[in-house]
Length: 112
Length: 114
Image 1 (cartoon, rainbow over the protein chains, first blue to last red):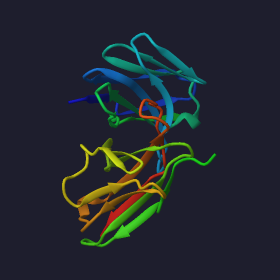
Image 2: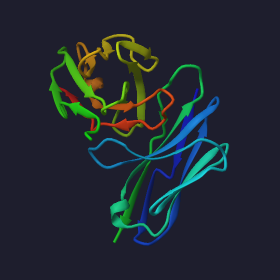
Image 3: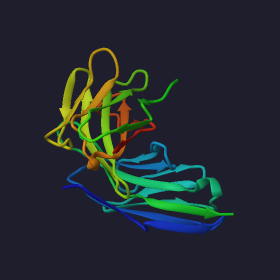
Image 4: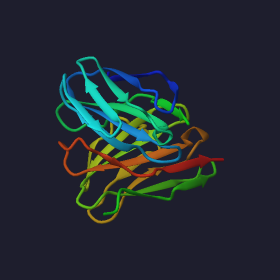
């Protein structure tokens, strides 16, 4: 069974204080690892897809990296508007399409 | 370019009633996924549909829940005889192809069973 574990569950940072969120996963063949951002009362907003170990992607203050067992979402010099819950998900490379398996998320608060 | 549209945004049903949740995918997308998010829980996959076909319903409860994606019109998630435990946020996502791993989510329908 595919599993995704995110840590920490919650993280409070000062504005400008860089940090990393962790996503550990087990999956029978990885088709893709996804990062989403979710604001309260909203649907998940797509950030990145990573496909193979060693791959990195960047978007503004966010950078996602991938190894064979985990992914990190690095946040550099965050701003209050980066406050949200960040979700990690995996999709297995099985025959036929499957939905995503999500972690419970990291609730990030950036204080001014 | 409108995103994934879900309605209603909020739905209140009494125990035993039926709930119908609708999802219109993004323009050009023919693959729809339904997820359920319980309080303090992660998103859980329920069902994956293409037009007129259910591809994977491995996450769907065996009883009371059904989904369809007709040739014309939105995808529908139907919950019959709702119980308090069905209270959750239900999200729909769509993608262009099954190999397109960028699925875009709607804003969700928040179902409350009283």
